[in-house]
Image (cartoon, rainbow, N blue to C red; front, side, top):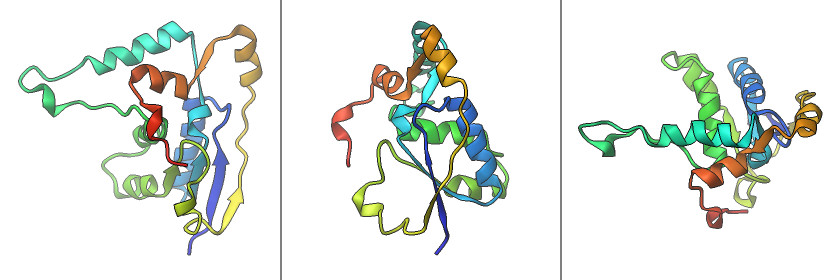
Length: 156
């Protein structure tokens, strides 16, 4: 059974955090990310919401049911960001993507047996203090709620 590395995403800047996770996954590490909803996105609230709401309005002219579709849950949103940072068409990128597991809060009880060998890993984050001083960030939970995520379906 492989050894998994547990990483907490609380108060981590989304882009920098996901790029470090993508690099670790490419190196062959099995990664479990918890508290995905508490990751932060830097920038003003209005700009962030405006940029992501523009993506939701894009559709094909011939058949809008064909997409593109964008994730609205924080765990799938973060996993999608990590996916875009991996080599898409190569086998090593696909294998690395399979080694990353993301959860909204803590690990659900039904998956606790799966991750018996967990080693905690810390990824540095120095910009949270500066961003909170200028109040220029939002949490991933805030963005996903604005995009249409329904929090009622959370399994703990």
